[in-house]
Length: 268
Ligand code: F6R
Image 1 (cartoon, rainbow, N blue to C red):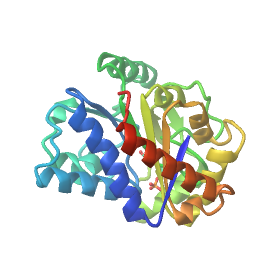
Image 2: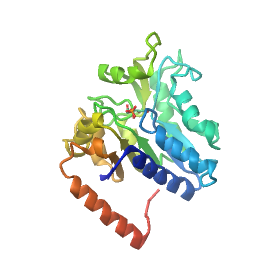
Image 3: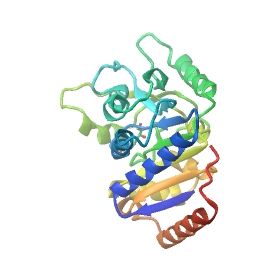
Image 4: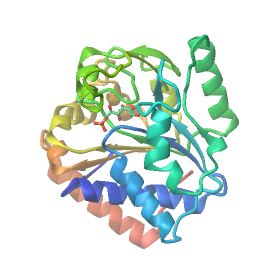
């Protein structure tokens, strides 16, 4: 894992945007894995800015989102499709027919839909760079604690903690779904690079469990310890429970020097 600690959330977003821009500018048919939630909103703002400045085009990009609620139509303001349109897709030149979310509409079989999503990712030649947030309980996507580390795209029941954490986004009388389709942990680990963003003190314990804890289904994000190219971007508050902060800073400075001497090397 490459753990990089920044002063604040804005710097996390700026750095994440550089990773995305590097991929999108470098590869002729880039495949992005995208996340929703509060954390990546500032990343998407950065990407929109870069696009508006003429520095970034998503014309040839395909995207796969991590998850989508069940029982919510695409045009519902709570759907993750709506979130992606509002925060990114409507403001850049991406071809929306090449943007995918793991949907399961009423009457559709979630098991078949999960398999079909896996197949679609394969046909696109896999995800180059997967953006991730982390739940306060260590979830990635909607892979809640106890999710199989070998899981694939499927239906999941959300935990009470996740429902409570996300209830801030729903009005008092609004329907809050308890089921979602999500990429599995193995699906996420298949991405060539994963870029996890975590900001705020409420993520500090989950970040510690992910980086330094045992590899365990109780902290699904700990599976990233098995990934060859996992980049963890943290603000100081999210890093506050990590013991080896000086080491991470020092190792990162060494990496910057190596990159300056030999150039960036991303094996997309
Ligand atoms: C979102 C997702 C979730 C979030 C996580 C953190 O697509 O899959 O795992 O990344 O719940 O959410 P925020 O960023 O709102 O704290």
